[in-house]
Image (cartoon, rainbow, N blue to C red; front, side, top):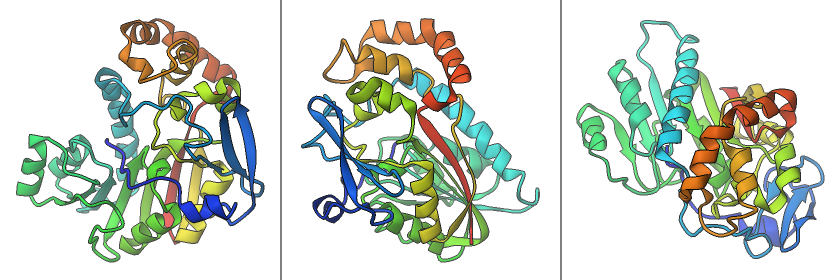
Amino acid sequence: MTPEKEGGTRASGVEQGRCEVCEGLLAAWQVARGCRLLRCSLCGHVMRDLRLCPAGAREQVYGGSEEFDRVRLFFTRRKLIKMLSRFPADRKLHVLEVGFGNGQLLSFFQKLGHQVYGVEVSRPQSSRLEELSAQGARLFFQGLQRAELPAETLDLIYMIHVAEHLPDPVGGLRKLCAAAGKDALLYLVTPDGHSAGLRVFRDRWWHLEDHTHRRFFTPRSMSACLDQAGFVPLQIQSPLLDSLTLEINSFMRLFYRRGAVMDHALVRALDLLLFPVALAGRLLWPAIRPNMEVLARRQ
């Protein structure tokens, strides 16, 4: 599930001191020494300028673990299977994934007999993509804004850790809404700028390690963004099991301040060892959960 990275924070929003979602005034938020974020006074939306908050960002975009990503893929697939239960069992759906990576999830939907679409910013190296295309998948490799999506056709749209990368999230969601059919569902997961983890770990919060993370939605700013785009929020919640090792990785960034913290074998070992502790912490203190999970319907 490679995120769609089309650029950074919309320049006009930062330069004019206005929120890209609600046009509220942005106020400087001194997260830590050498790291200042911009937070909307109305909806809490958080924007990031790398000149103000580099946070030891790694040069590469991906800084995770393929083994742990398989766990995320498992839980994501389960969530999406539940989405299918909202449609008639014999209906052939039109399914779009924004940021489809190597196409594993798209392949799953295609094998179920659905018409699949995918959007990426470049062509990933994966033999699976040739198989997808040969079976009728429509794949676009120039980003969401340039993708020639069919109008009022899609039934299910999902993007996993992509919204934080979009240069114009409202515009991107509007384009998805124009491609969505009646009562189409939108499912997404994105970092939560209202998470207590950001206040606890400050500039060491693992979501800040990725230099393409230029915005962090809050439940309020996400609701406003969806409303402007033409979607009705059905549910916004903090998932228990997404980014399972984020708190451990954030703590370890206190010691590994540059590069991808998960490149270190010790960190990966601690992720496995301390996972039960991190899970217990999320159960006892839900506010520290790092992400938000969103389900919405086209208006």
